[in-house]
Length: 367
Ligand SMILES: Nc1nc2c(c(=O)[nH]1)N[C@H]1C(S)=C(S)[C@@H](COP(=O)(O)O)O[C@H]1N2
Ligand SMILES: [Mo]
Image (cartoon, rainbow, N blue to C red; front, side, top):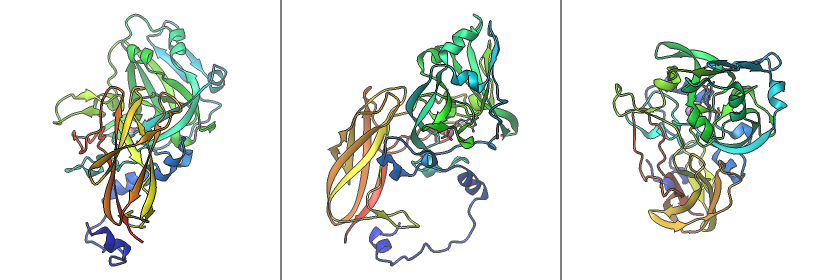
């Protein structure tokens, strides 16, 4: 890469045009799905339009009045619910961090053909809905039940397999996780692209578990064999191993890049003097953040933590920094209450899942 000074001195007015085209497949994916605008981390709650988006297939446009959620399969008391039925149950609003399991895979080589996420496939919205567990108890899984599957109305192909997007959780997981049936995001009805009219939110887990456009909850007496459960979202080092399933999020932190950006490169220019650097940190499974360290060229300083808005929300961190002229690499590194700490460099698996390496931002300090 060029020196940052060259960018801000206008010595490199534009990136040179290079031979070859963008990969059509990657551009197509990136144009349908988008990341968090990091600057919106100034607010506790991610605005709906700035929350990341990950949709595998087409967004199904569902008539809310006609929509039914069915509890089917090996339940003693199978039933169906309308949205009105769901909204008449006790309602709860929770700030929850969602993060895509593929967040951070952009720098892997050879690459995985999927969303080329940098750091921005995360967000913390306020989700409104009703707790799922009482409804499962009402449906009464038969003693032979091992898992429940959750199926969305969206449909497509992956690796030659046609399927509706679907995931499963064991009864034990459902008992422990505060899973919610959600109809609202940030005080408004769900938008079509975020799962309208009904989705699951599985707090503390990577986003793939939070099934959108939910239409069926099925009690199964054998483990679920859906494509999104057994083929993808596995930690594999070789293609033929079954791999452990991806579940709870790993400890992570992000910073709002300080200063002002260059349009094409996103390189940052900042004035010398005191800068308050701000970011957010979270971990999975409801584990709180213990500390965040702010790094400047590899030297670490303790950041101050605010109080998180809930067990599944991210927490604000900040650190004052006396910025001196020159090029610097800023970095943030969180530790959670179990002692888990972010690695400094990625630890890859075949799909680039759950990369929680530290967030690094290069800045040029100058007039
Ligand atoms: N039905 C359905 N649910 C889905 C998906 C999908 O493609 N179809 N994508 C999943 C993935 S991989 C993620 S990361 C989250 C993203 O949720 P968001 O787009 O509301 O941020 O939704 C999950 N739920
Ligand atoms: Mo995802």
